[in-house]
Length: 271
Image (cartoon, rainbow, N blue to C red; front, top):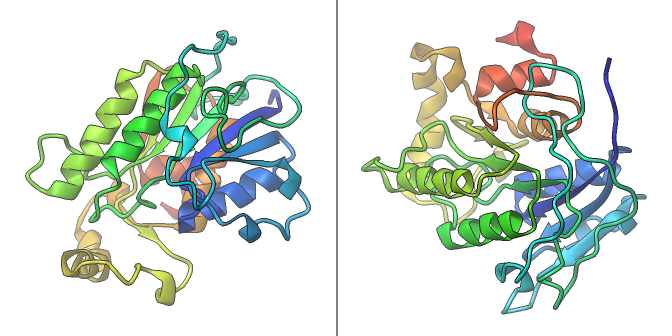
């Protein structure tokens, strides 16, 4: 039997393609009672949504000293542990109603009451390294606020010992999040996240190695196991949200590849 509970969420990098799509889904979800957009974000992107009032800002655009970068001086009271993973049907988030408080100058309490936090820095660009400093700051902020369930968008290539810079940074970020000891940490590890259209596949500043990887990997992937299959942005965003709302796992740290994501969103037959 599925048990539904309201939860409050936070998204780091709601201004990127994946972050924006995820924030939209969270705002429109009847189970998500509030969303804290952490870092710089264009609020007008969400003003057309009927649920835009659920959105709160922490470190608004133009704030050179984003308040989210400063972890709270004292953690909020510990809430009941949340369920984890995708092998069952009970909700992974703790209950709660109302909206999350957070805004410019409220760094110490911005994530207070948040049940599920999402770090999508890097937008799943496996061949490009996310901002390591910003990711560590978000991990520390979530740890200080004792957020029970944290989701990290990483890469299947993540390895802190890798000689490839992007894979090494992804690995270091994953280690940083694991060191915080969250009740539940969900690490999504796509090989490549496909954008909705070719025109928005990569930012203009993408370097040549990343462009070569994005264009050549779908062909090379045919010779690799299914877990290396590229995933659409729509599918991974849906998987991250449903993993919080519906899924359970006995593991404190779960690493989810393409096969796992398809199981979460009910597309096992496509694998």
